[in-house]
Length: 234
Image (cartoon, rainbow, N blue to C red):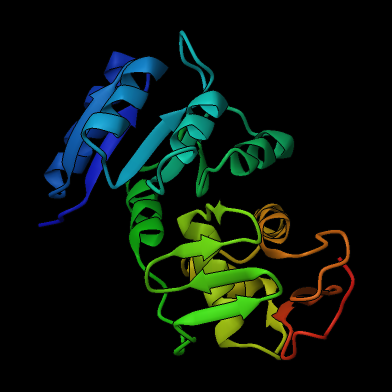
């Protein structure tokens, strides 16, 4: 049996019934909501572990809901949508989604995505506390204290940062980083990394346009500076 609690957000009652039946049959605890307001209320009052979020809802847009969730929670979000364009996927990721699944999809693919998002990456030991210029990051408590206030990092942002820090001074390829954070079924979704790396830089770099810590290795991947004085191109 799974202990994961999943919230399905979709205005299509038939889609909710099908997804609920498939997930319950695999041992997940399932709740559902048919619009954005109900979804946000349930996230606040009865937080799930993961949200399956359709983008087309009758009141709020899926992107608004995703941002609303991210304002106060690290709950994992998988967007499920008929929209296939890359800019739609990037917009969802920038709004805080952890993954994006295009309809129609098979149940087994959905289960694989859920497991990948829920699975915590197994990485080499990283420091408990990382002190950067003006920012203190505690990997155990997930607390980030910036120069002026606390900084909120999502679960995926923490996972990316932890993996890069645990491999400080080494180039981590796009594929390796994707598979470490999203799971073995990933490897080609480089746009995911661009979005999350840009968000991380804005939150922890003194000058995000000229990063000193999270460095781009052109055509290869990313690295975390082995020295605070290191620099690299965005």
